[in-house]
Image 1 (cartoon, one colour):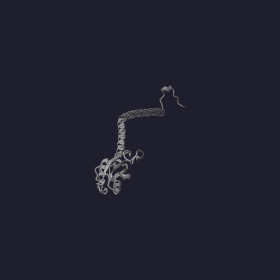
Image 2 (image 1 turned 120 degrees about the horizontal axis):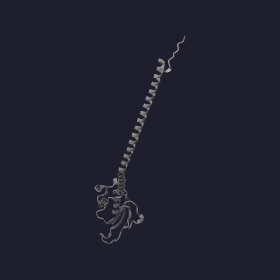
Image 3 (image 1 turned 180 degrees about the vertical axis):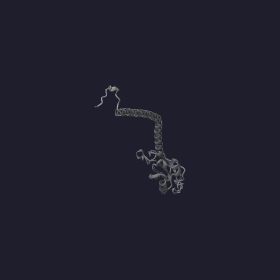
Image 4 (image 1 turned 45 degrees about the horizontal axis):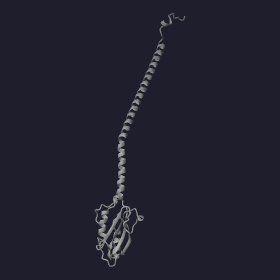
Length: 225
């Protein structure tokens, strides 16, 4: 006969197989709980890290904005500096070494001649000589020379010497004539000498090319005849 267990279900001895299955189930639940706990911790750490990074980025942005604001005055100063440098360069480009011009004129003018008048302009606007007018302004440095020389050949020689001076581009003769055949030459009148009126046009030089006024006049200019 088959034995019958008359004990209640709660009092019966559980089998080893049933206990093993329950143990595995408990371990599975514990592993799942541990995995979820690990995922939670990792997520919280990531959120904290991103929050800290965002705060650091905001602080860096504030620092850079403050730095840009503090450097604004330096930017304005640099702009003012550039404006002043441009103005100085423009003025330097328009300057002319009149001292050198007078030195060279003293060298090239023949010993038995003299100047009665000399007028010069950086812009070429001259009005005090017979050979120029406001309509003849060249925009370049220009000088008009009026004086006396004993011979026409001296006038031609003077023009050649003027043409060889520093920065001279062109020399034009407006007049060369005798005022009084019998009159004696003097400071006020050329008398029997030839009165000349010569215009000298100069090239505009860059600031670095402007003469310093300390160089010797070339001997090729004639040395005053």
